[in-house]
Length: 121
Image 1 (cartoon, rainbow, N blue to C red):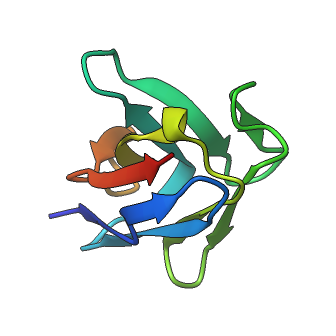
Image 2: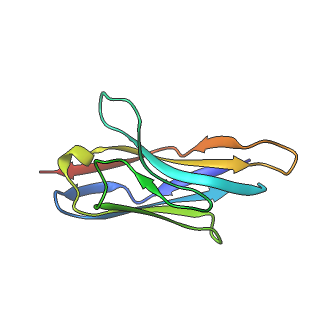
């Protein structure tokens, strides 16, 4: 069974930094795109950043220049380095991965359990 396990959330002051990690565990054939989404209180979930298995990354306009997404394919892990954090970055952050369970199956979207990021002013 595939699982995404997140870590790294917490409370930080405005202007500070946090680094989120998300590791995929279990048995699978390959990982396609990985990414981070967030859901602020009372709002819908939105894309923060996405990194494909090959090719360029993309970011939401609200985090461009402040957040950096990266991945370590040997560790099946995706990271989100968040700098210059603002109170409006406060949200639950969810890891996402599109994973092919086996060579005989099509890809499936998996989600982490979510990690809270709170930025105080």
